[in-house]
Length: 297
Ligand code: NAP
Image (cartoon, rainbow, N blue to C red; front, side, top):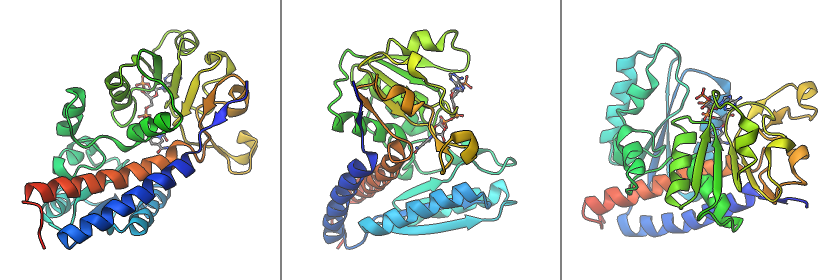
């Protein structure tokens, strides 16, 4: 068996084209574009690259980007004040606080200050609570992106054994909740799981998000399983054995003739995260406009 490679780039391009169409309709209806404010505190190079990518993606679909930057020594009150201003700004439909923050800042407390209606990362307690209750709200981008990939690959989820490796608030927990909502039987693994291999090998759908290079090898994968690799790990080219040094949590080469479908790194989950961010920004703009009475023209 040779796995079908799930092409996240192509699927994300299709999603972005649909969003661009809906943004045009939104602008025609309301007279202004949705706006996404990204807040970057400090000068972490990887975060700056991610924020730049998000801003460019906004431009491409007609969402107005607001690029907010604060110095690495910004105070809690300084960040809070900026978030309050963005919450109140009618041109801003979505607010994204780029994580991780510098160590002196309290990420969860600051994230919790984002207006839940503008919480396009789906990380505030209100949206996390709505998801766990199975109610509508803004949902975290990467798990939503994985659900889109699974749907595009035609993966049946109802009744299947799904295993999620990783239990972070950002990914693992919301991923498990979305799979549960789709009627999968879900198991979550983490660093204290006694026998990772024994749990993973039961999975019809195996999702790896531990941030550990090539943690998932051939012995972890049941023949015919669908394997989604969320991990992004930067190694030296020598360590990785490839020029980019970028590897996932799955040993791609070892698994590709056992899995039935597999996402690559890069080009799998990553592009979907940005596509879902755009989708959430549009969703936020549409629901704020609907609450304000719809046509603002
Ligand atoms: P995180 O907050 O560090 O969480 C990692 C999780 O993996 C934790 O729950 C941890 O368990 C678990 N874990 C660590 N080592 C393990 C092991 N040996 N066996 C089983 N579980 C283990 O990371 P995250 O934010 O969820 O991100 C995970 C990975 O996904 C990272 O590589 C990140 O870069 C990537 N990511 C990619 C995207 C994208 O758009 N492509 C988006 C988000 C994240 P404990 O809870 O017990 O510590």
